[in-house]
Length: 254
Ligand code: 1GP
Image 1 (cartoon, helix red, strand yellow):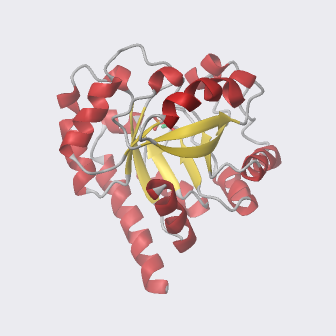
Image 2 (cartoon, helix red, strand yellow; image 1 turned 180 degrees about the vertical axis):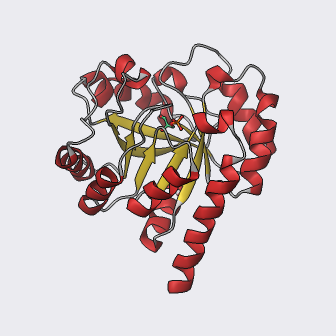
Protein backbone atom coordinates (compact mmCIF):
# COMPACT_ATOMS: atom_id res chain seq x y z
CA UNK A 1 0.00 0.00 0.00
CA UNK A 2 3.02 2.25 -0.32
CA UNK A 3 1.70 4.47 -3.11
CA UNK A 4 -1.76 4.98 -1.62
CA UNK A 5 -0.35 5.58 1.87
CA UNK A 6 2.10 8.10 0.42
CA UNK A 7 -0.74 9.94 -1.28
CA UNK A 8 -2.82 9.97 1.90
CA UNK A 9 0.16 11.36 3.80
CA UNK A 10 0.65 14.11 1.23
CA UNK A 11 -3.06 14.92 1.48
CA UNK A 12 -2.78 15.25 5.27
CA UNK A 13 0.17 17.59 4.81
CA UNK A 14 -1.73 19.69 2.23
CA UNK A 15 0.73 18.79 -0.53
CA UNK A 16 -0.27 18.45 -4.17
CA UNK A 17 0.73 15.91 -6.81
CA UNK A 18 0.85 15.70 -10.60
CA UNK A 19 0.10 12.67 -12.74
CA UNK A 20 0.92 12.50 -16.43
CA UNK A 21 -1.56 10.39 -18.40
CA UNK A 22 -0.31 8.29 -21.30
CA UNK A 23 -2.89 6.79 -23.65
CA UNK A 24 -1.24 3.69 -25.21
CA UNK A 25 -3.36 4.11 -28.33
CA UNK A 26 -1.52 7.30 -29.16
CA UNK A 27 1.89 5.65 -28.85
CA UNK A 28 3.22 3.95 -32.00
CA UNK A 29 6.65 3.25 -30.57
CA UNK A 30 7.35 3.56 -26.82
CA UNK A 31 10.61 5.42 -27.52
CA UNK A 32 8.51 8.36 -28.74
CA UNK A 33 7.69 8.89 -25.05
CA UNK A 34 11.34 9.57 -24.21
CA UNK A 35 11.12 13.40 -24.28
CA UNK A 36 8.04 13.29 -22.04
CA UNK A 37 9.69 10.78 -19.69
CA UNK A 38 12.77 13.04 -19.45
CA UNK A 39 10.63 16.08 -18.80
CA UNK A 40 8.57 14.25 -16.17
CA UNK A 41 11.73 13.18 -14.42
CA UNK A 42 13.27 16.68 -14.46
CA UNK A 43 10.03 18.17 -13.17
CA UNK A 44 9.45 15.71 -10.33
CA UNK A 45 6.17 14.36 -11.67
CA UNK A 46 4.65 12.05 -9.05
CA UNK A 47 2.94 9.44 -11.23
CA UNK A 48 2.48 8.14 -14.72
CA UNK A 49 -1.09 7.03 -15.35
CA UNK A 50 -1.44 4.62 -18.29
CA UNK A 51 -4.75 3.63 -19.86
CA UNK A 52 -7.77 4.84 -21.79
CA UNK A 53 -11.51 4.34 -22.22
CA UNK A 54 -10.88 2.18 -25.26
CA UNK A 55 -7.41 0.84 -25.94
CA UNK A 56 -7.29 -0.71 -29.42
CA UNK A 57 -3.62 -1.62 -29.51
CA UNK A 58 -1.67 -4.34 -27.69
CA UNK A 59 1.26 -2.16 -26.67
CA UNK A 60 0.11 -1.22 -23.16
CA UNK A 61 2.66 -3.57 -21.55
CA UNK A 62 5.45 -2.22 -23.79
CA UNK A 63 4.53 1.35 -22.87
CA UNK A 64 4.55 0.56 -19.14
CA UNK A 65 7.85 -1.36 -19.31
CA UNK A 66 9.47 1.42 -21.33
CA UNK A 67 8.52 4.02 -18.73
CA UNK A 68 9.70 1.76 -15.88
CA UNK A 69 13.04 1.08 -17.59
CA UNK A 70 13.75 4.78 -17.94
CA UNK A 71 12.49 6.44 -14.79
CA UNK A 72 11.60 5.57 -11.20
CA UNK A 73 8.27 7.44 -11.21
CA UNK A 74 5.50 4.98 -10.21
CA UNK A 75 3.29 3.77 -13.07
CA UNK A 76 -0.38 3.46 -12.19
CA UNK A 77 -2.88 1.77 -14.52
CA UNK A 78 -5.94 3.93 -15.19
CA UNK A 79 -8.05 1.20 -16.74
CA UNK A 80 -10.98 1.44 -19.12
CA UNK A 81 -11.66 -2.25 -18.66
CA UNK A 82 -10.23 -5.49 -17.25
CA UNK A 83 -8.32 -5.90 -20.52
CA UNK A 84 -6.03 -3.14 -19.30
CA UNK A 85 -4.46 -5.02 -16.41
CA UNK A 86 -0.71 -5.38 -16.83
CA UNK A 87 1.59 -6.77 -14.13
CA UNK A 88 4.48 -4.55 -15.20
CA UNK A 89 2.88 -1.50 -13.56
CA UNK A 90 3.21 -0.57 -9.89
CA UNK A 91 -0.44 -0.01 -9.04
CA UNK A 92 -3.92 0.17 -10.48
CA UNK A 93 -6.77 2.58 -9.85
CA UNK A 94 -9.50 0.09 -8.94
CA UNK A 95 -12.25 2.29 -10.30
CA UNK A 96 -15.90 2.25 -9.32
CA UNK A 97 -17.78 4.48 -11.71
CA UNK A 98 -19.95 6.02 -9.00
CA UNK A 99 -21.42 8.76 -11.19
CA UNK A 100 -23.08 6.05 -13.28
CA UNK A 101 -25.69 3.39 -12.70
CA UNK A 102 -24.13 0.67 -14.82
CA UNK A 103 -23.54 -2.36 -12.59
CA UNK A 104 -20.76 -3.61 -14.84
CA UNK A 105 -18.64 -0.57 -13.94
CA UNK A 106 -19.72 -0.61 -10.29
CA UNK A 107 -18.95 -4.29 -9.55
CA UNK A 108 -19.02 -6.50 -12.68
CA UNK A 109 -15.55 -5.73 -14.08
CA UNK A 110 -14.18 -5.86 -10.55
CA UNK A 111 -15.30 -9.46 -10.00
CA UNK A 112 -13.49 -10.50 -13.16
CA UNK A 113 -10.39 -8.48 -12.28
CA UNK A 114 -10.12 -9.46 -8.60
CA UNK A 115 -8.49 -12.92 -8.97
CA UNK A 116 -6.07 -11.64 -11.61
CA UNK A 117 -5.07 -8.72 -9.40
CA UNK A 118 -4.75 -10.99 -6.35
CA UNK A 119 -2.10 -12.98 -8.23
CA UNK A 120 -0.22 -9.88 -9.32
CA UNK A 121 2.02 -7.55 -7.37
CA UNK A 122 -0.04 -4.54 -8.37
CA UNK A 123 -1.02 -2.24 -5.54
CA UNK A 124 -4.78 -1.76 -5.48
CA UNK A 125 -6.01 1.81 -5.14
CA UNK A 126 -9.81 1.72 -4.54
CA UNK A 127 -11.10 4.83 -6.31
CA UNK A 128 -14.53 6.41 -6.67
CA UNK A 129 -14.56 7.66 -10.23
CA UNK A 130 -17.10 10.32 -11.21
CA UNK A 131 -17.56 11.72 -14.68
CA UNK A 132 -18.61 15.35 -14.81
CA UNK A 133 -20.33 16.71 -17.89
CA UNK A 134 -18.09 18.96 -19.97
CA UNK A 135 -20.27 19.72 -22.97
CA UNK A 136 -19.79 16.94 -25.47
CA UNK A 137 -20.17 13.19 -24.95
CA UNK A 138 -16.82 11.77 -23.85
CA UNK A 139 -15.44 8.34 -24.75
CA UNK A 140 -15.62 7.33 -21.08
CA UNK A 141 -19.33 8.18 -20.87
CA UNK A 142 -20.12 6.49 -24.16
CA UNK A 143 -18.13 3.31 -23.54
CA UNK A 144 -19.41 2.94 -19.96
CA UNK A 145 -22.98 3.71 -21.05
CA UNK A 146 -23.41 6.15 -18.17
CA UNK A 147 -24.59 9.72 -17.80
CA UNK A 148 -22.03 12.14 -16.33
CA UNK A 149 -23.05 14.37 -13.42
CA UNK A 150 -24.25 17.76 -14.75
CA UNK A 151 -21.49 20.33 -14.26
CA UNK A 152 -23.72 22.67 -12.22
CA UNK A 153 -25.07 19.99 -9.84
CA UNK A 154 -22.49 20.61 -7.13
CA UNK A 155 -24.42 18.97 -4.37
CA UNK A 156 -25.07 15.87 -6.46
CA UNK A 157 -21.34 15.54 -7.10
CA UNK A 158 -20.57 16.10 -3.41
CA UNK A 159 -23.10 13.49 -2.26
CA UNK A 160 -21.77 11.03 -4.86
CA UNK A 161 -18.22 11.53 -3.62
CA UNK A 162 -19.33 11.26 0.00
CA UNK A 163 -21.14 8.00 -0.70
CA UNK A 164 -17.98 6.73 -2.37
CA UNK A 165 -15.96 7.60 0.72
CA UNK A 166 -18.56 5.93 2.97
CA UNK A 167 -18.32 2.80 0.84
CA UNK A 168 -14.64 2.70 1.75
CA UNK A 169 -13.15 4.07 -1.46
CA UNK A 170 -9.84 5.70 -0.64
CA UNK A 171 -9.58 8.23 -3.47
CA UNK A 172 -12.15 10.25 -5.37
CA UNK A 173 -11.42 11.12 -9.00
CA UNK A 174 -13.56 13.73 -10.76
CA UNK A 175 -13.01 13.60 -14.51
CA UNK A 176 -14.36 15.94 -17.19
CA UNK A 177 -13.04 13.44 -19.76
CA UNK A 178 -9.97 13.36 -21.91
CA UNK A 179 -9.59 16.51 -23.98
CA UNK A 180 -12.64 18.12 -22.36
CA UNK A 181 -13.38 21.61 -23.63
CA UNK A 182 -14.25 22.75 -20.13
CA UNK A 183 -12.22 21.54 -17.18
CA UNK A 184 -14.07 20.93 -13.90
CA UNK A 185 -15.03 24.24 -12.31
CA UNK A 186 -13.49 25.62 -9.14
CA UNK A 187 -16.92 25.64 -7.49
CA UNK A 188 -17.43 21.94 -8.21
CA UNK A 189 -13.97 21.07 -6.87
CA UNK A 190 -14.39 23.21 -3.73
CA UNK A 191 -17.81 21.76 -2.96
CA UNK A 192 -16.57 18.18 -3.24
CA UNK A 193 -13.32 18.96 -1.39
CA UNK A 194 -15.26 20.35 1.59
CA UNK A 195 -17.46 17.26 1.72
CA UNK A 196 -14.92 14.44 1.74
CA UNK A 197 -11.88 13.48 3.75
CA UNK A 198 -9.92 11.51 1.20
CA UNK A 199 -7.54 12.72 -1.53
CA UNK A 200 -9.29 14.32 -4.51
CA UNK A 201 -7.98 13.75 -8.05
CA UNK A 202 -9.06 16.14 -10.82
CA UNK A 203 -8.58 15.59 -14.54
CA UNK A 204 -9.91 16.33 -17.99
CA UNK A 205 -9.22 19.42 -20.07
CA UNK A 206 -6.45 20.88 -17.90
CA UNK A 207 -4.51 22.44 -20.77
CA UNK A 208 -3.06 25.66 -19.33
CA UNK A 209 -1.13 26.40 -16.16
CA UNK A 210 -3.99 28.75 -15.15
CA UNK A 211 -6.46 25.87 -15.22
CA UNK A 212 -4.04 23.74 -13.23
CA UNK A 213 -3.70 26.45 -10.59
CA UNK A 214 -7.46 26.96 -10.45
CA UNK A 215 -7.92 23.23 -9.75
CA UNK A 216 -5.18 23.16 -7.11
CA UNK A 217 -6.41 26.28 -5.32
CA UNK A 218 -9.97 24.96 -5.36
CA UNK A 219 -8.85 21.83 -3.53
CA UNK A 220 -7.51 19.23 -5.97
CA UNK A 221 -4.87 17.08 -4.29
CA UNK A 222 -3.71 15.65 -7.58
CA UNK A 223 -4.16 16.89 -11.13
CA UNK A 224 -4.00 14.59 -14.14
CA UNK A 225 -2.76 15.96 -17.45
CA UNK A 226 -2.82 14.03 -20.70
CA UNK A 227 -3.87 15.60 -23.99
CA UNK A 228 -2.33 19.01 -23.42
CA UNK A 229 1.16 17.50 -23.08
CA UNK A 230 0.86 15.79 -26.45
CA UNK A 231 0.58 19.25 -27.98
CA UNK A 232 2.93 21.14 -25.68
CA UNK A 233 5.14 19.01 -23.40
CA UNK A 234 6.74 22.16 -21.95
CA UNK A 235 3.48 22.97 -20.22
CA UNK A 236 4.55 20.34 -17.72
CA UNK A 237 7.46 22.50 -16.55
CA UNK A 238 5.16 25.48 -16.03
CA UNK A 239 2.61 23.47 -14.06
CA UNK A 240 5.11 21.50 -12.00
CA UNK A 241 6.86 24.76 -11.03
CA UNK A 242 3.54 25.95 -9.58
CA UNK A 243 3.00 22.67 -7.74
CA UNK A 244 6.55 22.84 -6.41
CA UNK A 245 5.98 26.42 -5.15
CA UNK A 246 2.73 25.34 -3.55
CA UNK A 247 4.34 22.39 -1.77
CA UNK A 248 7.24 24.54 -0.61
CA UNK A 249 4.83 27.12 0.86
CA UNK A 250 3.00 24.36 2.73
CA UNK A 251 6.31 23.16 4.12
CA UNK A 252 7.33 26.62 5.33
CA UNK A 253 3.96 27.24 7.01
CA UNK A 254 4.51 24.23 9.27
C1 1GP B 1 -8.78 11.97 -18.72
O1 1GP B 1 -8.40 13.01 -16.62
C2 1GP B 1 -7.79 12.55 -17.77
O2 1GP B 1 -9.40 10.84 -18.20
C3 1GP B 1 -6.90 13.57 -18.42
O3 1GP B 1 -7.60 14.39 -19.32
O4 1GP B 1 -6.28 14.23 -21.44
O5 1GP B 1 -7.84 16.16 -21.02
O6 1GP B 1 -5.69 15.97 -19.77
P1 1GP B 1 -6.80 15.24 -20.44
